[in-house]
Image (cartoon, rainbow, N blue to C red; front, side):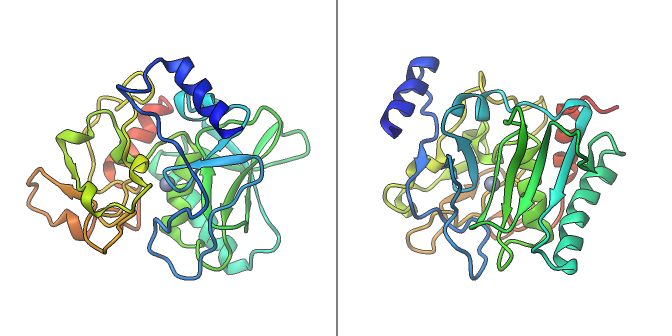
Amino acid sequence: MLQYVKLFLCLIFLSCKAYAIPLEDSGDAPNLFGLEGLSENNAIGANFIEGDIAVPLQTGRAAYIRSPKWPNGIVPFDIHSLYTNDQKSVIRGAMSEIMKSTNNCIRFVERNSSTPVWLRIFPGQGCWSYMGRVKSRGAQDLSLQATGCVHHSVALHELTHALGFVHEQTRPDRNQYVLIQTENIQSGKEHNFNIFPSTSVSTLNLPYDYGSIMHYRSDAFSSNGRPTIKAIIDTGKDWDSTMGRGKNLSNLDIAKLKAYYSCS
Ligand SMILES: [Zn+2]
């Protein structure tokens, strides 16, 4: 089945060679966040690309080519009752940061019985999200495993996927900013470092951001502990030890969220 999905994607975009679309992870999805006690990412009815982005089996195309927005920037949600009050506070804190940072242009609101589509934040296996609003009815899952994923930075990262964003280092222009050290990548995981073509992903005319909450760590998918991603622009900061380890939205993350949702 997977082969047909991949073939379908290739046929749609006619760009399999020039711009390889990230393929699905099979099985051992990595721990992108360097966290302890995580299960392998697992979602029913979806595959994963780049470790933590879920792609619906039937509608894989829309998930990462169009990244549908939440209408008017309003994201109805519910948080699973199995979380403790402290965990719920962490999740709400991440939502609050996004809302405050965008001056409430993006808003998370409790769903009600007439909400057509909502984000269901639940303690599944691993930390993952779909990209954008991909469901046309009902609950769209976002998993934050109760033991391992409920951290402010991880919740921010997954919520930002849910708002429609890819990983920063898959931008079409990323080779101008980072060097991918393929010799340190786990065998079979190279596809996680593919680039989206500019026909799929917009940079929103905003700069590349080593400090993005959506950037991989420098040792993502490393087979030997050595870096797989190195910053190649000297900004006067040691990004190799800090990229992918931020705790909050960067100023550029905020600018991109505002641009994508046409915030004033
Ligand atoms: Zn991610």
